[in-house]
Length: 319
Image 1 (cartoon, rainbow, N blue to C red):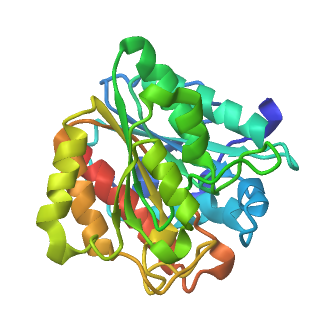
Image 2 (image 1 turned 180 degrees about the horizontal axis):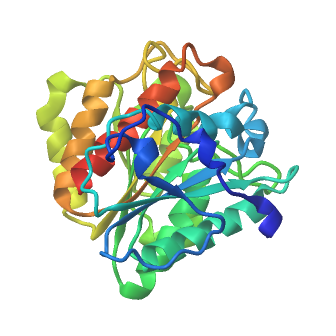
C-alpha cells in the first residue's frame, strides 16, 4: 500500500513571501504519511489528492486528470489566506493508481477518509476522475453508519454518474451507481445541473429506481434560485451530514475548458458559489471533492484556478 502514496513536495506550494501568514502556501503543512493525529485545537483541513486516470480511461474519456491535484495545488498556493490561523491545513499528498489497479487506490482512499473524519478533519479531495466519488463516499458512509447518521450526497455535475459497471469494473461514470448498490437504504443523492444530452434515458430510469433527486440544467440557473433553494431545503433537512462533489464538467466550458468531457452548456461559478454558501450555512457539510480537472486541455490554468477558488470559498465559509 505504501507505494500507492506519494507525499507532496513542499515546493509545489509557492507564492508571495510574507512575514506573517497571508497566503495559502504559508498555511499548508505537507505531511509524509496518511496518518495524522487530531488537530490540537480541534479544527483541521486535510487535502488529499487522487492522481488517477484509470476510471476515465475505462469510461472512454480523454485522460490527463491524474495531473489535476498538482495543478490545483499550484493555483491554491498564491491565494490569499482568510481562515483563522488556528485552523491547521495539512497536505496528505496523493494516492495514485498503479497500472490498471484502480481498486487498490480506492480502498486506500476510503480507509484514509474514514480515519480523517474520525480525527476531526474536514477532508478536501482533489481529482482525478470522478470514480473518486465511490471511494470517497464509501469512506464517509463507513464513518457515519455506525453512528446512525444519514449522509446526503450533493453532486454538481452534468452527468448522473449512475452508469453500470464495465465488465464488472467501476469507472468514472459509475461511482454513484456503485454507492447506490452497495449501501441501498443509506444512499441519498441529489444531482444539480443534469444535461439531457449527456444522459441517455436508461440513466434517468436508474435515477428513479434509486430515488435520486435532480435538477436539470435549464432549471439550475440563478434566475431560478427560489426553486433551487427549496430543493436544497427539502434534501438537507432529511439528512444529518452532507458530502459535496463538484465535477468541473458541469460548468460551462467557458469557465472550465480543462476537463474530460467539456460542454459549452453548463452552470456558472456564481451559481456554484451560491450553493457553497448555502451548504456551509447548514453546518452539515462533512467532506468535499473536486474532480475531472484535466490540465492537458486547460487554457492558462483557467480550470485549475476555478478549482482552487471553489475550495477556498467553501473552507473559508466553514470556519
